[in-house]
Length: 238
Image (cartoon, rainbow, N blue to C red):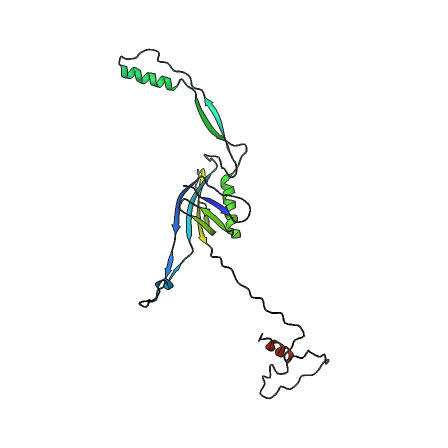
């Protein structure tokens, strides 16, 4: 199985693995625990949860194919010369035995052309992959994940595991991703309020410093005589 991870960071990167060992696609809905009245809209009591995907993705430092995205690796043709083997003597009579030896001899007569995967420089694919996955998780990078079953959009990496044992030539990374619900918020632009507008339609007058005034009977003493309160209340802010 194969899966590709495409980060939404304008880097143009496409993350691949040697092989996907297993996939777990989860679509879960949360159902209310309260009784539902007969005749009610049942869909109002079922809430789908964000999609979840789990992957076991194996990566090693001995890839078996050229990575088409990183262009790492090159296939080189190699002619494998084999010595010609002839039957020295006829060991036993019998056409079946002679036919078998003849076919085996002809198999070794022709050189075999093979292709080998070669690399121009050393690399550590395990370390590179782990660092990239940690980057996606730490920075909360939105991911597009393509699998053989479906394509996921707006996914975030919630868990990365990298189990290793002595003698292992690769790592089977455990990945858990979850869909992130994205909504657009609306904004309403309020009409501008002139700076000199005050309650009563009269501009403020600079009367200099004045002492505190006694509140009007029945008025809140904590707010009485406060010009700031009158301005804010007139604009509906308090």
